[in-house]
Amino acid sequence: MALERTLSIVKPDAVAAGHVGDIIKMFEFNHLRIIAAKLVKLSKQEAEGFYAVHRHRPFFQSLTAFMSSGPALVMVLEGDGAISLLREIMGATDPAKAAPGTIRRLYATSIERNAVHGSDAPETAAAEIAYFFPAIDLI
Image (cartoon, rainbow, N blue to C red):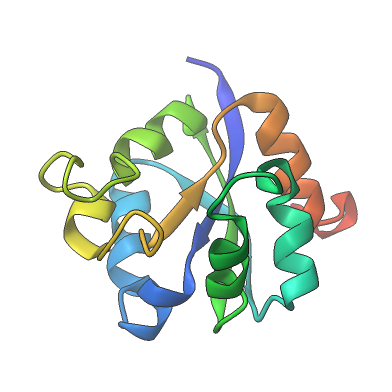
């Protein structure tokens, strides 16, 4: 597999519940290396900008309100096949449908409060990383 970078966000629900360390352990156990990280408190406007692709979806307002409700940990992860690997570790968006042992099965409470975000494709990863980390910030 090719070395890739992807964006991950430990969402406000998982940060508030104290699951950051456990989630990072899962990333590291699966050979995803953190190359940049920062704790952020998104404004509603920043959350709307990040999730702009979903602007016309019925869940947009509640999603952006949730994402701006508290601190979130934003990270750039690097590893072989990082994008698909991260999505596998996260599990299905609906925690009830997520595989046992995945982040969402372990720590999410609903489809919206699903503990983590991960990029879904190389193009998305590039745009999402740039949203939070200008190139100068990356190692």
